[in-house]
Each structure stands twice: as structure tokens, then as C-alpha cells.
Length: 166
Image 1 (cartoon, one colour):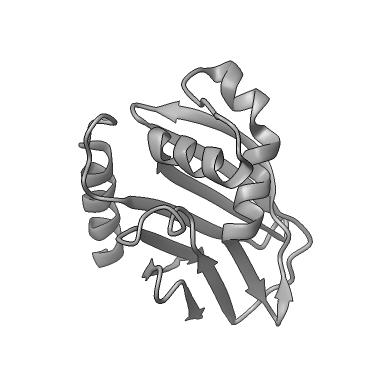
Image 2: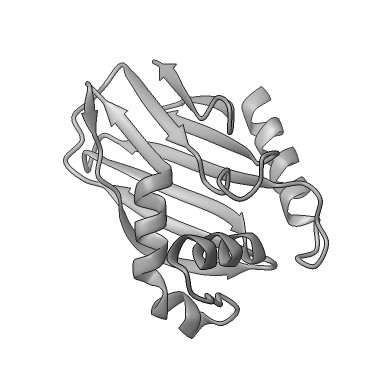
């Protein structure tokens, strides 16, 4: 219950900023293990303007994500960026993530990723360095759900990874 309240608070906080002048740099990523499909499903929320800046700097070209067609045109860049900035390991094995799609939610992009053929685990290590290359004060909230258990962690540039045990 505490994690649910905390999640709701941060989601409200995250969606209350305008894209023109936010001073808080925050992303929220939800990771869920689905035993029935042996998959890890990931939903990550980031501010549009921050992701545009990060992609533009990393790939050396101006990137716009303002329209749905921009999301489609830059899907490969988003997937490349996330493959370097978000990693999940279980049973000492990397879980490769594939970007399934994305959508807009106010001034944020919601990204949907999936890792397949994931065996059951008792612990999972997550590294989330999304946007930390752009903002030293970036905070990445990560919620990991397995069954009815949800564990949360706050990852920052200096401590970009954490382990959750079930």
C-alpha cells in the first residue's frame, strides 16, 4: 500500500510540471515480471523535451519528438538510447529489451519495452541511467513488481543501479 501511495504521489508530481520550465528532473519506470508469459514488461515515463535533448546530444543531430510521426521516425534512436541507459539482469543474465512502442501523456513520453524468455528469479538488478548524462540531478524512480510484491528504488547518477530481492 505504501508503494502504491508513493507511486501515485510521484506520478502526480511528474505530470504536474509544464514542459517549458521544469526544474525537477525525474523519470518513473515500472518493471513487471509476468510469469505466465515469462516476460518482463517495462513502462518508462520521461519528459519530452529532456529526451529530445538527450537524443540530440548523444546522436549528434536535432531530434524532435513533438508529434506521433516523430516517435515512429526516431524509434531506433529511442531503442538505442534505452539499450545503453536501462539494463535489467536476473539470474546473472542480461534481459535484452525491445521497444514495442510509445505514446504521449501530456508533456511526457511513455515508452513500452519488453524482455522475453525470462526465467523465474528471486532477485533482479536494475541499472537506470536515463537522462543522467544530461542532468546531474536526474532522479529515476523504479518500481519492480513480481506477483503481488512491489519494491521501489530511487536511482541517481552516482548510484545508478540497485537490486531487489523477492
